[in-house]
Image 1 (spheres, rainbow, N blue to C red):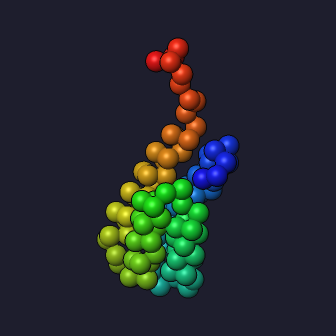
Image 2: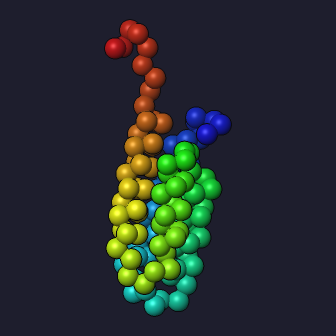
Length: 101
C-alpha cells in the first residue's frame, strides 16, 4: 500500500466484502445473482489486496464461487478473513521505538 494512513480503511472495506461473501454463502446456491456477486466481491478483494497471499486466497474464493456446494470456499474465506484481520491489526499498531520496547 502506498499510503499507510489509508491501510486500515482499505482493510476495513475488504473485510466488509468478506462479510458480504459470507452472507451470500448462507443463501441457497440457486439464488439468482449469488455466484456473480461473490465473484465480483472476490475479484475486488484480489485486485485491492495489500499482499500476494491475500490476493491468492481471494482468487481461490473466486474459483470456487460457482460450485454449488463447495466446502473449500468456506475454508478459503475463513483464511482470507483471518489474513485481512491480521493485516489490519498490523497496520493499526503504533510503531514502537527503542524507548518503548
